[in-house]
Image (tube, rainbow, N blue to C red; front, side, top):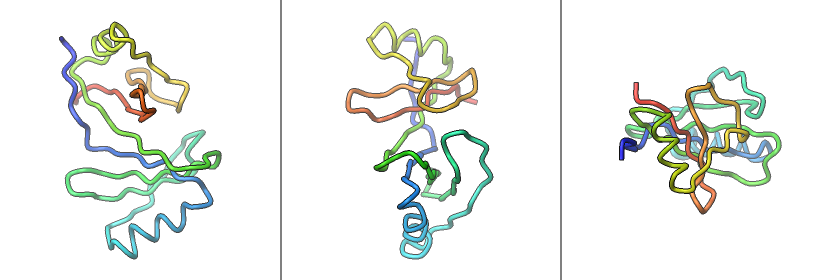
Length: 122
């Protein structure tokens, strides 16, 4: 296999608008983690906050059209095209319609519906 998958540092939690402020307060006020709002220009995410979580970063994304939260994970590969070919040969299709991405990245899901962002190692 030419596609070596590694966990990335980014974790996105997609949060319904109705629960967003309470979720921000939970991470900031109860867990007392550093929570910082970041600018975002995305058609499906109206606001985002960055939370340092050990060696990882949790992105708390406000999504206006969701009814429940979802956790999305990052996968890093040496070559996105080869990894995509490998995944497709194993029955895993990309689902880039989920959310806008740069051309050199893809969305995939596991059988349970967990979303992964597939991107090249920098």
